[in-house]
Amino acid sequence: DQQVKQNSPSLSVQEGRISILNCDYTNSMFDYFLWYKKYPAEGPTFLISISSIKDKNEDGRFTVFLNKSAKHLSLHIVPSQPGDSAVYFCAASAEGTYKYIFGTGTRLKVLA
Amino acid sequence: EAGVTQFPSHSVIEKGQTVTLRCDPISGHDNLYWYRRVMGKEIKFLLHFVKESKQDESGMPNNRFLAERTGGTYSTLKVQPAELEDSGVYFCASSQESYVAFFGQGTRLTVV
Image 1 (tube, one colour):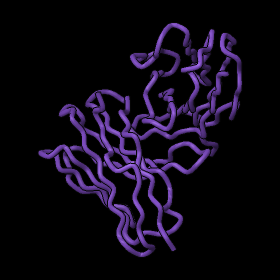
Image 2 (cartoon, helix red, strand yellow; image 1 turned 45 degrees about the horizontal axis):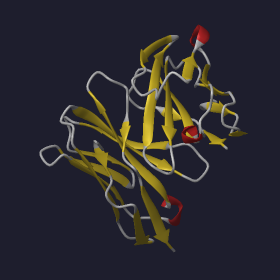
Image 3 (cartoon, one colour; image 1 turned 90 degrees about the horizontal axis):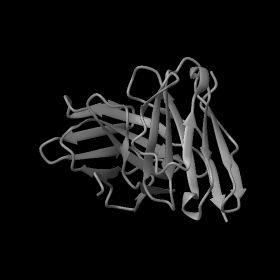
């Protein structure tokens, strides 16, 4: 049973436009959420995180939004750049644990 | 500062053989994790060390997998005997006290 779901396997966006990547979760015990970016043949690289006590966290071009009632989070990238092309993983952890549950990833392609 | 280092980067072994993967975490990180990604699916948790102690090994698939972290520094993950379904990319990650883990580049294991 997939506790963290990324229902869009891929997304294409024009350079300069906004990229929105979505993630849904089912476990109400999750209280910390992260986004990782992964290039081919590399390990996941931490991008941004959010605690369940917040509904928004921003870091430069990257913003994560959390809607606890809907059990949904999203990553916004504005403006999108070709170097953002990668696979993006959403991950969640439950209070008191350091174990991440990952989604299956969304492949983002930013077109120049 | 050196990141998480994994060795080897690739390993091809025959079914029934033994393989040992090594991970060197970021210096000073007490938390060390092993994850696995199979067939382009989600990245799945295997286990978590705090220093040399296994904190959570709920993700270990079966007793063919043995992880150790002697002295609380580097860790090894041994698969013995390897089966075809063990093929995948094995990631190691480490963290200090925060929830953010930093990943290595992974070891791609192919069992033939």
